[in-house]
Amino acid sequence: MPLVQLSKVKSQVNALDVHFNDPELFPDYLISLFQMYENKKVSTNSWLRKNSQLSFYYVPESVMAELESRIAVLSRMKPDSALINADILWEFPYYELKKTAIMLISNLDEVHEKYFFQRVQLWLSVDLEDILIKDLMATVESKSNFLQSKQWLDLIKTWLDSKDTNVVKLGLQAINRTLSHEYHNLPVVFSALAPLIHNPQLVIQKELINVIHALILLSEAETASFLIMVGELFPEKEVLKFIRKCLPLFDNFYQNEIRSALGAY
Image 1 (tube, rainbow, N blue to C red):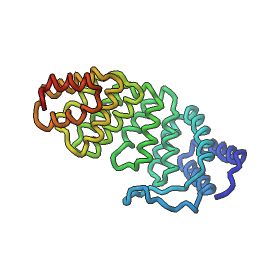
Image 2: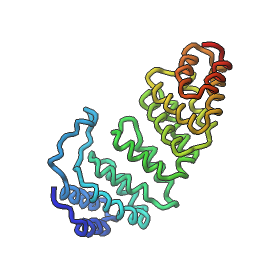
Image 3: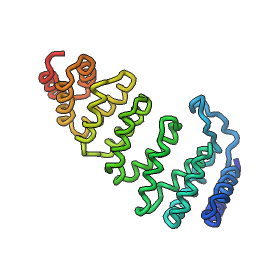
Image 4: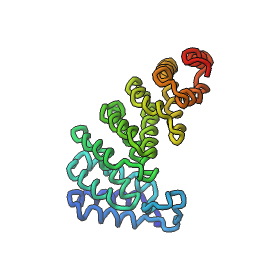
């Protein structure tokens, strides 16, 4: 890997300005930049899924940081070109190119933020590598207005309603991360979770319990009332069994409240 001289990197990154409006030349210049700083000694992708098609240039963080700084400026100045470039880069099977696509959409100005959400909705999928899911989720988390938006919760609900349990897990992970940012519209979350607790499939229970824990941290009383309500509406064996698994997450007072409301089980 070549020695990284930040002054040289800065000038190389600034040269992207010349090609930013040309969707054919911009990816080529970016690829040549990544190849210039590629660390070929790092060759193991063993932590990725075996069927992963994602490759890496292993570009140093210092180079990626300088790139992101310039991309942030260009995206705000030229949002139309940013969107075109992002869509093109996302199709490449390289992490750094997809990461740059995420940089492009995450730095759009407020007028174009709806396009950011459209790309997040389009790109986030259960087949996406975990590292990219985390990167996309991080961009959502950086925009507090998106975390609080109806659009975001509606997208999560579509995942929770999926017949594919892996997609459901993605939705539960998204709720958990949203709650970690002190999302307080808990009734909306309770409404989305109720069907899953009515049918608490074993394969999603770990993620589901994690969400219950996150809800308790925000409001133990409301979460206890929610589980009591679900248990009363759906007093099936599996539902009560799941609620029992959640009891250790509560303090003694609310454990007794839940037990008292739903009977000795």
